[in-house]
Image (cartoon, rainbow, N blue to C red; front, side, top):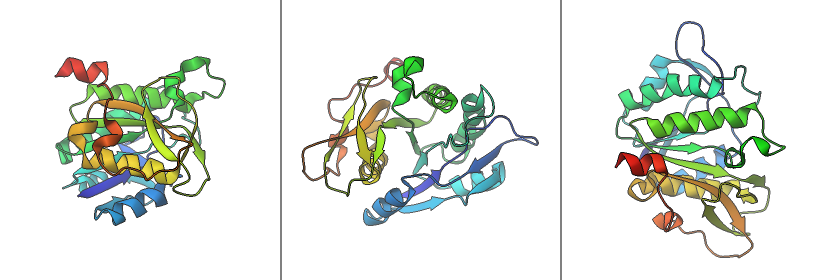
Length: 224
């Protein structure tokens, strides 16, 4: 598969039209490594601002798109998540209408505003999630928990649809779930789930089994 990784900053409207400003993210190396091991061709935009044209060019022919919005620095407007979605999602739909989108969100979105660690970036991610669900592209929304520095294979990885899910997860396990969602869109489509590790050492599955037993989001179920 041909995959494109986008790591846009959560930012408000830009002068002169859609500008997608990207920066590195904490699981980038793990996703790149996992993609190569599985025989996929992963492209990412260079960090920095890119106009709509270069983003569209990069999207051409993509089978899947990983979107990992970056909220550091924090969003500059209360509508940053919606603004980013309005700029980016139509580009994807126009240039790669059949591509499956995997959004790497954050588990605090499920906890809502009562969680003490919630920030403006959390609510911007929530708004981006809503916009993605309402769009025409196929999608999976993943909400990693706190990033762990444990070596790969230390724990098993699990998905949870409990909105109050919490825990730790390694970059390699995030990458494994992201790639599985892209490889098995028929299984992962329309699902939102938190990613966390459990203290059971066992191989990480590389099939759609990650998503077995999960229920489609209400928005997706209603659209079918």
